[in-house]
Amino acid sequence: MLKLTQALFCAAAVSLTSFGYAADPVIIKFAHVVADSTPKGQGALMFQKLVEADDKLKGKVKVEVYPNSSLFGDGKEMEALLLGDVQMLAPSLAKFEHYNKQVQIFDLPFLFDNLAAVDRFQQGPKGKALLTSMEDKGIRGLAYWHNGLKQLSANKKILLPKDARGLKFRVQASSVLEEQFKAVRANPRKMSFAEVYQGLQTGTVNGTENTWSNYESQKVNEVQPFFTETDHGLIDYMVITNAKFWNGLPEDVRTELQGIMDKVTVEVNKQAEALNQASRQKIIDAKTSEVDALTPEQRDEWRKAMRPVWDKFEGQIGADLIKAAQDANTAS
Image (cartoon, helix red, strand yellow):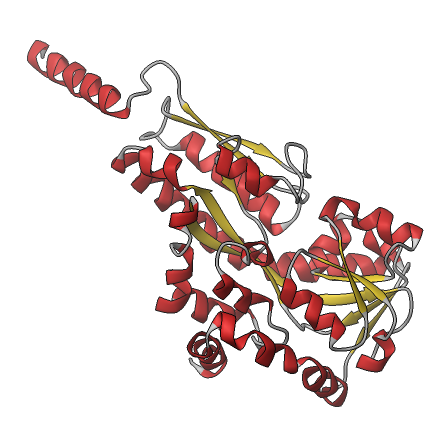
């Protein structure tokens, strides 16, 4: 019994020494800009909970979650990650054009028919390759998390592309999304997520694009009388970490954290659509706004109006990547 106790003590000592953090756990600050009730918010809390409950990581890793831009906002979070001020983020895929132009594929309008097609592309070889394509820039992708397909909101009813002419739409800092609205003769305005409600309330912008869960959690229906179900684009996130931080962790710890992230990703992506549909119903039940569905003919009009955006960015994204995404619509 004494020998067994000594052996276990030595093994524990070696493990702690190899980890290099015997006294204090590694702190992973996971910051994001949305509410806890959204798919991303739920995913971050789930990751925190599973890391805390994992016997292999107890005393070694602690996850702290900072929602609602409480630590860093849209404009500062990437810089904070690269400086090591946070260790984990889940930015919208629209945020990565400055690090890899190919990631702009996720912003192309009307590219994916549904979330099942998005899954097939992201889980395929070309989608997975994008996760590790920015390590030379200090960014390591760990997973894709769904938020959902985007809908339009505005201060007037919008059913056809011509209805959007002249309106000021809030967009994320994405060249593709700017061109998307220019294609229908609307005026894109870059604005951080935390400023959207006030921007819509004061008329700085007249409309925006987002998912139902983001609309409902931020109470956008209080300041937008009209929503149009377009499913015209995707809001997904790439869960990322500082590459130097990640590569500096012991291999066994990295493996355990990645395994937990993979489990969380399955749940987040499974629950995202249900959460969006529940949020959509809450907006309808609030009776503050009108929700309009497009007819197939109206949807085709939008597709035609925005299709030139594909051609404009094909050189940066790559025709082969766009084809792989299109193929995901028809694959089974």
